[in-house]
Each structure stands twice: as structure tokens, then as C-alpha cells.
Length: 85
Image (cartoon, rainbow, N blue to C red; front, side, top):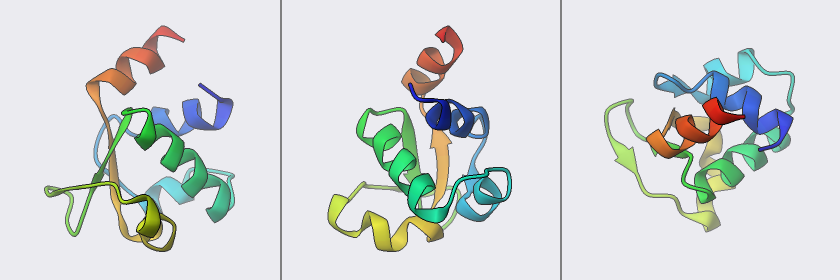
């Protein structure tokens, strides 16, 4: 897990909007979306959309353009890895 991914996971113990995640991060939008994409592909983060209670499937083709509209939450697997680092 990279430093950026670790920092993002710190914020995802509870459902967090992209806007809130961005406000606590020093990453640029492209970097943040790329790190989220990697965490999602590893199964460490879930996407929620259009509201914080509805899980949304990951679509690689559209993720980059919609990344800033999603909510995110760490998965159990992601928290286990995050806490073991």
C-alpha cells in the first residue's frame, strides 16, 4: 500500500464524499482519483452513489469522469490491510 493509499484509507472508516476526502488530502484530483481507482481494484474501497447508502458498481471506463461525484467507504479487507501496515 502506497503512502497516498494509506492516507486515503485513514479517512474511509466511515462513508466519505469525494469533496470531504479532497479537503483532507494534499493530492491533486488526478492523483486522488488514481489512488482511489487502485484501492477499488484491489477490493479495499467501495463506491456509493447517488447517495451514501447505495452501493455502486465500479466501471473503469467512466470512473475518471465521475470520481468527484461518488462517496467512498473502506471494505473489511481494506481495513485489515490498512491496520496491518
